[in-house]
Image: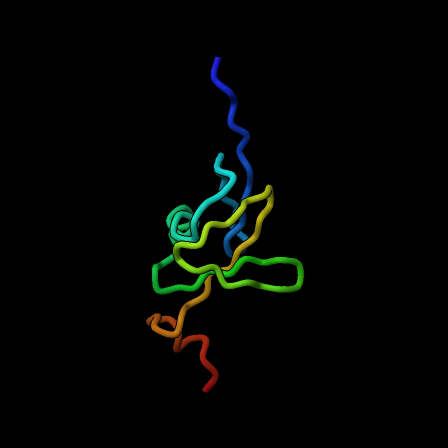
Length: 83
């Protein structure tokens, strides 16, 4: 019998996604959560957020949390920019 793969929950913008991977690149996380490529991804670590570059490999833990926000080149950026 093959080994069972434990799935873990990760959250992107408070939406839960399940994966059996223990590590993923930012690009893989974005694809899983259907985050637009012109958005920036941040890993939430307690009270801090850390930018996750597109090819950076992230070690995942159950309930890892990320935020995806429009980047400065995003068409949505103007919605978040102070006037």
